[in-house]
Length: 423
Image 1 (cartoon, rainbow, N blue to C red):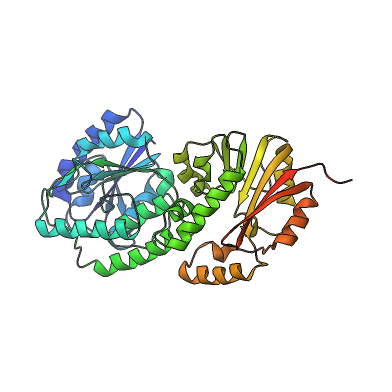
Image 2: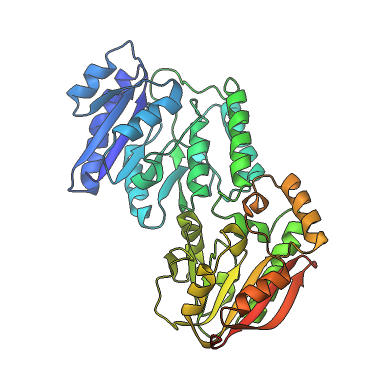
């Protein structure tokens, strides 16, 4: 099954009789493979279900309430590699699906967007103004490089939405889905689209009526966007609106990239979405979090989904290994240091960055960080190193300390060189 089309519907018999034949023609023109059309019936009192079955589509009965419940039911029932969602009221032109399908190689989610250049929306003035305000509120308040996150005309790769936990039950589910996809590092492509007025019947959208639901969703998504669970956390911190956070990220980047050889082969272990990857020429990024690697694709560097405890490289593969802000997130022990030593060439460099818990300045900063940025990395520090302890532990495993630098006297960045293990 290549494409599953999901259409939420409530008393849309007359519109579906026009839409479904056009939809069959549009999808058949895209692919010779099997597809399915699923209409999620939200309790229609007209002959919606009978019309759908007579026109070669499948009816799924909605169990959870609202538009969000309809989409969840449709996602669960779908079996295609791609899931296309659109409205039943003919405001989404089936002929436009061809443009969305062609853009699928550029992103995991393709959105038919009313608010990018060449896009437009034919709708009542009040509703259009409210829609624009809603989109600005979400995209600017959550620092999203998107324009139309309330469009329901979308093409998803099924992996992006299958099993996604969704709390929203109203139309705010559209914002929740897109922001969750963004937080997972999936690429989102907006294609200019001309939105049409519904053909028959009355709209089920009431932006003012759903106001509290939108506010609740905004709060939850704000917490997600500002937590380490968001794929672009490190990249976004580099340009943070919070001056200390922005300074810290840039100073760390400056020190690490200066210590690492720019042209020699480097391995960045626990690379996350840090811009260190983009600043080194011959570098491979490794991270255990797949969402971080999805985001880091934009840097154009080789990426590997693996653990610091089991690096999938041959012995002596790299001139330099970078481990910045990683070791405090894992249990104390020799294994990760030995694994990084194994993949280093003889005489290779190890750049190791971690907070210095031996300094009062860091302990104060961490306490403030925890309060100012709840959900940030401060909540994940489980191993607390001080300089003397860390240097002794690493040198015991066959390294020699070459340099020590600090960010604000609190985060230590150590440069070691691989030597022979002591007898």
